[in-house]
Length: 259
Length: 354
Image (cartoon, rainbow over all chains, first blue to last red; front, side):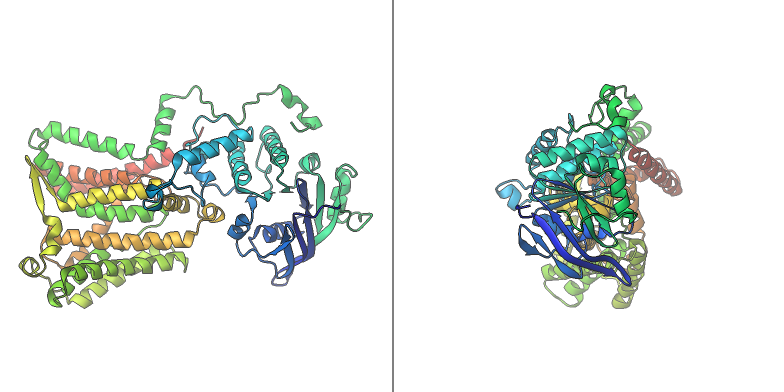
């Protein structure tokens, strides 16, 4: 591929005591694509994702965002650099409203004295942006953006979390098992949402155990095995059983890395 | 639309309204639950109004006078202010058992600085406030950075501060007359003015203003939303980019400062400054007001206005029973019932869902 990857990692190593979670792992995400990351339990997927989302600092290796080397010490720093993560537990505050949740940690203050002296939140502006974002993603017919998140269904909560990531993620959105806790219909809704986010030009890293979902939406599939990238496959050229075979070591990929 | 897979084909005919917010056939009880969920101060307000009506009907005009009602406010000023401090801490899913003794210790420090050491009164007050803040900071540090449970931390500092208070002061009371003569500013919050038969002290006004200010901060500033988020789900708050440790540290410190402010108000109300006031259960009264006010002990839920109503409920009940000539133990009994009822209602409201 002639295009430069937007996010890449080379030779990442992460050890926890005597366990090597990442063993010189590589990673590449190209602009505008959905890259699925799959791997067996314990293959080091989570460590890889944590390293690129800033949740852990790798012992060795380098991460580049748009060609610039970056070193995230916390998820906050990754967020500031434009990498948003939708966590499996969603990281929403149940008792707060949809709007409050979307802006949690980066609230908008009123202009002028009210904002600078009295630190007053600009509720109307936050509510408007939250509503715009949710309807832009074709998400919901919202009646009350001030509804507490705990009164929403699982799919709706996922929608709020994805909308938050899409609203603020300027470069990359990482989604950790977005359909794991959802029913069939709600999963479909979330998959549409993922494609919607991509159509907005944001590349997505999708971590999932659900092979049908991965093969349906991913442009490329990164297969992680024994702490490193085993191969990257095109879902159109391989079957789900091939992917599972690679993932579990039942079969070796034809070429080492088909990028 | 993504291309559906084989097993999902049938979904085309299915109901597509998964993620809409429509409500239909909601029973009255459900609607009440929703209303209370979004308006947490409503329950204590309703109870308060009911209590006033019931005692007004049984006692008559004597109770229903503005004199009696404002007297109740004077009696609850200290507990109301301490309850406000307690509310901040409980909103973060913590508890502060030490604020009662922090208040007494701060009062003793203020009194000693102003009268025994002869420092200018404003400086004595600032030192007292600083003492309260430092005690709170210690609590906050132990909770946020040492990750010790708030109950244990403040149980410990409760004893530590109480003992320090007695050792330092040698249990000597500073007399009312001495305070008046040398540091009248310490009695500032006893200043009262009349509106007809209503008597308001500056202490009452301070309590109301403090609660209103905290209400504004909790509901209309980012920091306030962070306090709720930390109490609600600390892990989610952290992942959302909130510096949870700093929020906790600030909450406990502010709680200490407010306790010291309550100390200043209490000097006005009590006249003298007595270290042995530390044995009074101000602390439990503040927790009672907070819980009756609908602040969830599990954190993240409730409105600080509820705490004010909760303190008023306790005040109204004890005044009402007093005027009826009932045994004071009835007040204690009724308070216990209210606490359990408040927590039961809280649990019910928390179960709200679509």
